[in-house]
Image (cartoon, rainbow, N blue to C red; front, side, top):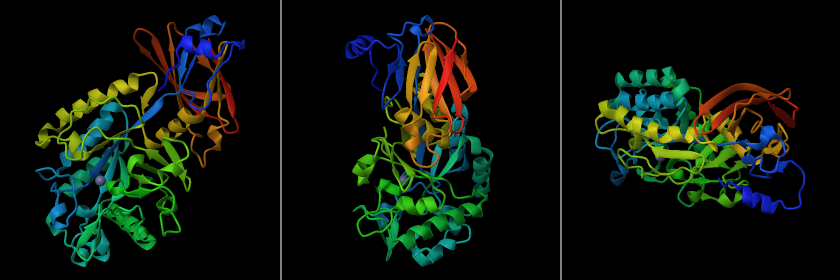
Length: 425
Ligand SMILES: [Zn+2]
């Protein structure tokens, strides 16, 4: 985030005598440097960037990278996956108070061999036989997932990750390597079977979020297709796609830099992961600047599953400080994430004497419900304050003490209030 220093700001604002400080567009910080109010003199207000944790390629039971023999890449680790690997995701979520997104591949969860009816979905085509993976670990893992809904969010990644024709695959399941979406009827079928596999284990309904397999994705319709993947997804209730824009086709169509709306589906740039998908485990140190902490399942697991908690602890220690920064926050779930990202981008904040004014005019131009939900503010100050408002509900207020005081306000918008005032006492 670009922080505007007092000196720069005063220089830029020479000649402006109003006490109001105004930042357009990316309203993330407002500082009270020329405000005459004693109350506001020491205040800095942030609309923090939300950070979401997204974990890819969850769901495999085999860890083998089978790509050399026309099987999927899977996770490429030298052991099978076990229920403890699911527990690791839930443990991460619980320790941080968030719902990490687990982007699932489900073919090895098929206990009825229904994927024989989806020959493009697996390496065995209509001879699909998954009997070797049927066992008590299904229910053990499913129970972990069901019991930890607050700490693990199921996300669609794919049925088999790649796309098979005549026994050979091409990358990837939803979109090919030239950026063309697979035929619409196949996309619909793959979504239907993904949901059927969830239902076999009482893990439905179909999730509302999506990570494209192998990050092959086109924003908007691809060459030779009438509709975009997003248009199909939204018909199935999916309203959010997370993928790196560096490998997204037609990325220039994304309207707001870090994100865009494709058929009203919020599509967010994942940025670059710190680790390759094969890093097993990872030891995170990278400074996060975007809105997504993307990783692959092996990056947070240990070769000995009993030692998974050691690796989870590394990720907790790495991520927790992000939540303590004034200009960042860990998104507790993907709904909050989407709203907060919209606010971070478009909600304008002004400090006038002892009032914070929030203007949602630009935010409310986003499609659908994006930006209409809760908003988090962080306020840095050197002395205690109280915050009140008739215009917006202050759902919670928490205080982090350090060299300065840092308040965190969770705010709930009232319908029809396009501009609100929060009084600081
Ligand atoms: Zn993947």
